[in-house]
Image: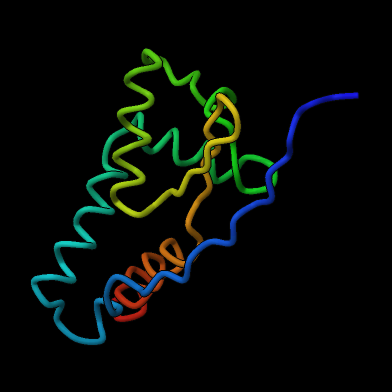
Length: 122
C-alpha cells in the first residue's frame, strides 16, 4: 500500500478581466499597467515556451518536472515561471516536492477579448 496522498485540485479563483477590448474605450493607466505586465511576460521566448508547454499539457496543468526542458537551467526555469505567475497567467500548487502549474483560463480569455476587439475594428 502506498503512503502517497493525492490532493484535490483547487478551483481557480474568479479573475476579473484586465481591461476592456481595445475598440471599446481607451484604457485607463491602471488597466494598461496590468495588460502590459501580461504581454511583457509573454514577450520572452523562454516564458512563451513554458506557457505553451503548460497550456498544451494534458489536463491543462503540468508538473515543473515535465516542462523544464526549454534550453535553460532549472533555476532560470523557476525564475521565468515566477514571472508568469506574477503576471497572473499561471497559478501553481505544490504537491510533495513538485510544483504543478495551470493556465488561468479567465485571464487568457480576457487577453483574447482585448485583442479580438482590435481585430474586428481593423
